[in-house]
Image (cartoon, rainbow, N blue to C red):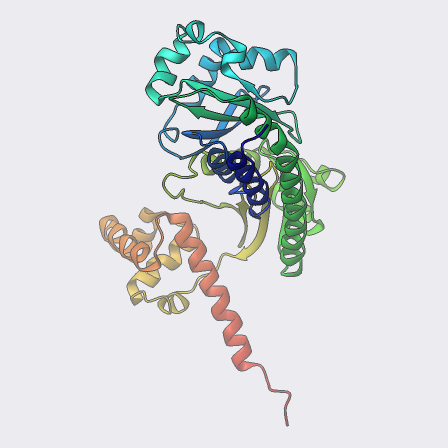
Length: 375
């Protein structure tokens, strides 16, 4: 028999699970809903990719789990946690207490308990596998310090399992619709679009992206099938990894990839999707032309605009100094001021701003000089 108060919290949790519509926020949202429904000290959604040796968790509350060494935690669990051993034998989605899997005295003698759980104040756990759309396995974990979970609470977690699965399925459907809209919008704007996994495998490639890849990387085989060049794969994997690890911490600098060819450049950027392993890479071609007068519109002095114009054409600071007959230190100082005025932190970001400003200025000038059709 489920107590009335626990039954009420179960209904509230089932409702709250369907209120989250952002896949990126879902893991932490799920942990919070379960922690409130079962009156836990903390709750986790743990994702393990055995093939890649990766371990990730979302927690509520975020401290003290935010700063854990995930690799070390994964190794300790693989050795000492009885739930891990059980998962290797069975994928049952029954909710299990830690005390059902091992006597408390036995578990408290493990290195996992002595080195981690005791410090985190975890004495009792309730664990349950949740389905995964890929080869990874996932589990929800509820933690307490003072008392073990009851049979009724065990039943509540199992009763919430179908709601968790339905909410995640709806999130994936919504993400696919949003992804389709993003691709259509980018294609309409003349951009190329590629959808990749975190390993760099291509699942979708627009025709414009395919043509640019073939042109900029001299890869005619790309016309038959799409395999990203090694430089693009390395950049994309690094961006995905850094942004995933940096969530909840400081803002991660998002550097695009720029590949030049003659007087034009192909700029790659990626929209990292933390909810699923599908990331949208956009490609845009720009002209390597940033005349100084166009850059003065960004608030630069004539000399700063002249320096930035040469930098945007691929010149090094030393080459700019030779061209302008100035000291290299003077060029460095001008660029420091340019970065501050443009609100950027890197040379690549400044160059992109310069290209974009020049292109916008050219379009505006063309609009201003185009004859009017009105009589």
